[in-house]
View 1: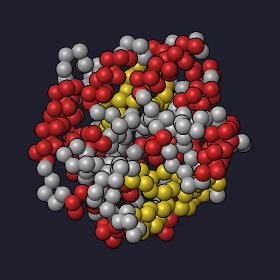
View 2: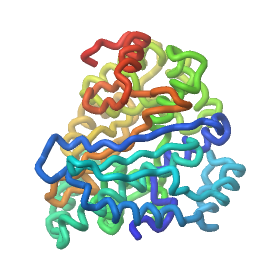
View 3: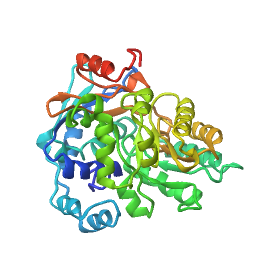
View 4: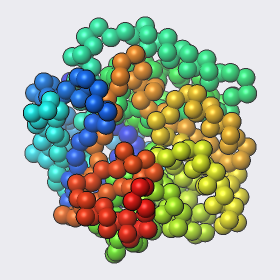
Length: 398
């Protein structure tokens, strides 16, 4: 089995799941799969592996949380005891997920059911699809090449003047494989160091954080703010509703706001003085990161908030050179954090799968994100997208 623990996922799935339990226990959702690779021959040909993917998902649905895993989660200051008790009874149900082959050679993956009982599918299912694909297409992977590339990245990070640059692993969903993911983390921890004096800040993967003594990292994802389009009182207030609901749950913990569900301009209109002070910082995940950072710092100053007290997190398709360039532009002007995903956990010389699973409906209503990178948009209802643009005053080209 590829997934052998329900902790083998990103922390923000648990933090969002806790909000779902406490505030939206009756929400019904639907997720859909998408492969963003731009027509590369053979890359999207996943249909031959449908049976293997289904078998791995079947194994995933037989897993329970173990006592040591529950104790690890319970020790986190922001995880409530009733949520841990719920997880103690939790099991993923195969009836909520469907995987089918399409005539084009691609696959269709649909996850549909109660939010509380489907939210933990996304990350392990993506990891399963990746590993099944690569173990069939690269039966003798070039691990030596992967190690050489990782060594180059570490050398770049250890260059003079970068001692305060700290990175985190955000690569679970698109990793080459579980074993390689663990090797990458062990190598980074050994050579970059961990803790306050090290350059490896932590990992989004809860299982490896527990096993390797790393800091688990994560707050919220797009799906949370998308769900709020259907769960809030009215669409125009959904972003404000989502941020306020999050603050009500965590009371100052996990204070990083995601800025690109409706694009940066719409985010800044809602992210007023109250939210500038209330949240510890913001996370970038689409559009030009240099422009985004400058706009975010200017917004803090406009609201009379010292940017040096706030954190900017960059997490969009980062490479080490891009991370270094961002660090050099913004160091000393604010707190900085960098989450590197695919470029850390799937860089062995093969083209990685650019795959995602995104929420497309909540309580029977379409939901969407309109990010600053149009190719990242995902919605199956064009009329709803047009309405969303109108409500949030988003140009058609956005």
